[in-house]
Image (cartoon, rainbow, N blue to C red; front, side, top):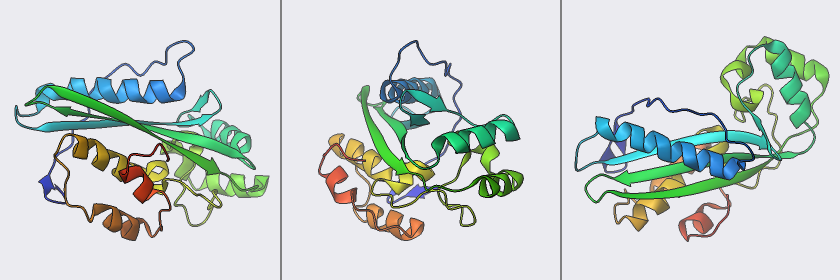
Length: 204
């Protein structure tokens, strides 16, 4: 597959994802991203870059994984509604030729609307929450749980591309510069923080 002028392939490295006692969400996702990068290094060629990421949905210090059942999905959605929580995505890039590793973290504040219990029940019955951390998909058009987002939509939906690009730029290996524009067009989201992220500011 291609990313701008890059070709890429995906692997699923196996790492221990147990959270350490007292570990902040930002440290947790960066540590796992780094561990995944190192675990996948043996599957790549000597002149390649290895990119890995890990995402966590957090409400304060509490992390929300994928719900195991309907009751857990309902509980998560009730806990998250009506206020903002955070989505943390840690990214690690390993340059195998230079044995150089860089990391970054995207932190997006996610304001949830005050959806009601019948809406939760209908959404859970759809089956959509069960493979989603936090039991929701920001892009779901029927439930649309998030309102007035002012951060990185891509991180909440899947992967913060601008954070990856600035890591690659630090390695002097950035793909084509029009990728942020293409990302926004694909997501149909006019990102208010893309330029600031690419300038190196700590916004998400």
